[in-house]
Image (cartoon, rainbow, N blue to C red; front, side, top):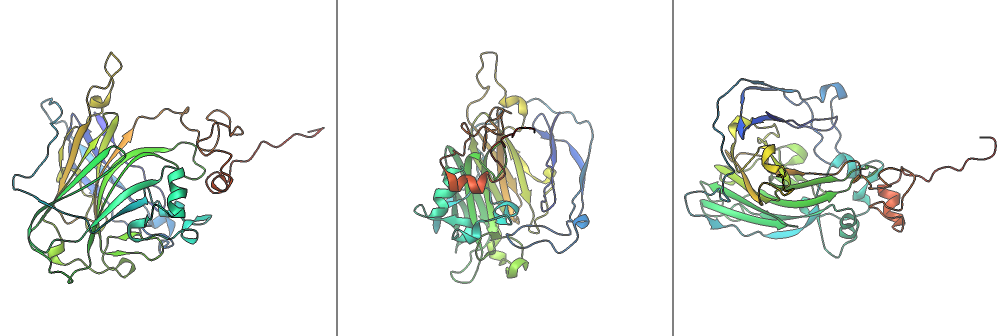
Length: 362
């Protein structure tokens, strides 16, 4: 069995699934209602800490499956698709984490200017700052089409190629709706403040944005949250398929929410590609079993977000040298955030101080 689970903490919400041999074995799943969700910068939960807990459990029974090889590099609709052109593409904050970037002691909203989807210009100070810590991705924005049909959007970044196919039963007359679809891609070793190990991930993520928060540019996906309007019926897709070409060393997971930001049961998703850990191991010759693989997830279309995220193999502890040497917290010479970048270290490595000198008698 390959068990894939998500751990959540205060100010966080997530779901989990159980896989084996590329098949979902969950036949019963119970998800408690979230009483509060910390989704936007500078908007704290209204309930007490004890109420901000989501518990997800599943019952798994033995099920017979046939062993299958990796599916080929295709997961397409039978009907022809139209190219969905973006109305804007920009560099964006790769892993927004509002509890990290938009709250005390680090509130980058006071330092940088963000556009929709937490995007920024190449010439901006925000780009310079986030590029130095591998926190720059790319996001494209799409307006629901004026004619019904099946539309495909594409976005790529740093070796990962993403595709989103949406089936719209109705067209949305120009100027009548507010919804934007944000399609983001990222691949790299993202650095977080005062965290020894970078987050080595890749993802393709499609979000249905009803409004963008002022200041942070965060995509608001739930009606009435922050004054966001409900989407028009014509702006809701009948189905969504997100696929991505991931490196062979990247183990994928599908993370999907419904329109209320609740996790969608894994048994309600259609997966293609390979979700077996064994397919990402090295053979006796020391090379990976597979080449780059296309993974895909298909949903019913009424989703706040649909994401394929891949975790990459990472060397621990030798790779955990964001602010100091991996084996010496007081040695900064081999840190990913160099000592020469004083302002950057003051923000990212503020808790890493030089070793105090011992005086006589101590």
